[in-house]
Length: 135
Image (cartoon, rainbow, N blue to C red; front, side, top):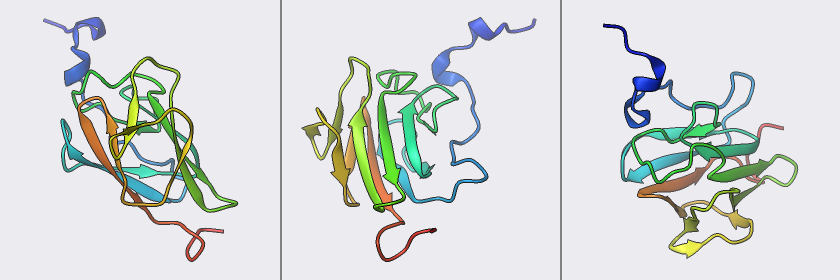
């Protein structure tokens, strides 16, 4: 019996690990500290890193938390000119939190913050800053 793509439950579909493209250097990481996918990490690249469950998202959180939107639940941005990170909520109904505060406007991340999306909690770990960057 052949399984049709529409018969595969979105929560159980296997995907390749999310990572920056081969040409993008890693500028930081999101580490899943609670919820489905606990212990996994995702590489952050320069520019806009959309967060969602869909395979096409730069930061794909398809670990089984169906409260995370498929596309653009949130975006984590690294500005290579200023060496600063920002988080903004996506264009979805679901909310994003930083250290239990709702993200209503873009917020700067310094490192060590806990990001809440659905039932998933992520720790933001920065690599690049004014002292170290790839430029």
